[in-house]
Length: 403
Image (tube, rainbow, N blue to C red; front, side, top):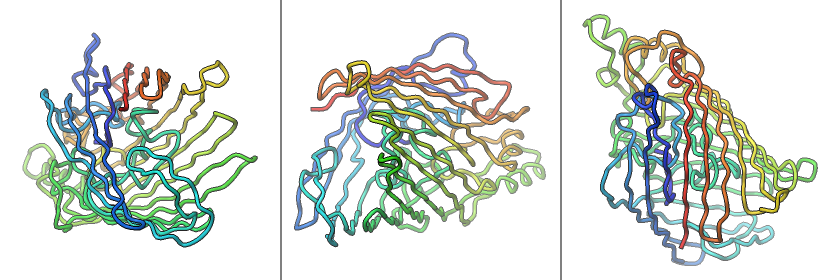
């Protein structure tokens, strides 16, 4: 789900229960090409379209790891290329004063200047994490880490269809070193669906507060995020009770009703020295209910470093190292131990629970201004929270081109 724009290709990033049990190497690939279109609409207003062609493996039958190892992969896989319009949104910026800052041209950004203090309104089809939970060192699978629980807060169950996009609107108020954000977004019609509830009967409310600072003369950011998903969702214990009374396997789809599921996330990024940055995320959500969109993670702690290659004569290269520990609630443990299935985990048993632990390292080589190549290695302990599984090593290769 997390793939959010054209990412080139990723080879060897496959996962799943089958892959995790095999003793020989298995490879999977994804490929996509995105066209970034933007135009001024009026004073302060801009419009953007991101048509995309995708091809590759999907996650609809993958049940082997909660922190999925490829942010390049969608939950829908097709052997033949297919077309999607992933983004179609309008952005309007109202100047409130302060010094002007330069805006560099890039994906979904037009060159120009912008008042330091401003009110920014965004509406249309986009990804929630285009705006919320961003991080300079761990957020973009086309350029940095790949694991879902590292590029985003693991317990941030953000609104999205199976491709990672939704409809909604957000407002951001920036004043000095502070920014406050809020948004309303459509949830899927049913959890983990290809289709959105376009009538907004099921929705997510998200708020985030950002503080920018300097520490030892180096810039940093601290963000506090809160969200509430409101929709038809199941309590794990209700699914268990129904299964016990009927003698079947627990199934969350049989006991869904309207409820709310809140969560929080803390997000830190800090430059430590020239070319060296650190990040950390801590997140948690209501573990009594099923995951709606993202993955089965009820609590997560992630941290890492990113280092530019200035010290070895490759200033545009980057090497990164990060680790994450994911966990689920006691209610979720009971459900999966009884044979329940989730979005990305569940195989009929969970005899010995253990926190899922992932270490990821990558080296991104800058081949030219428009071409990059990265090698990625992930080591997963207790995949899908099962001490009787793993450890698993996954090697990835990513090629990214811009034209």
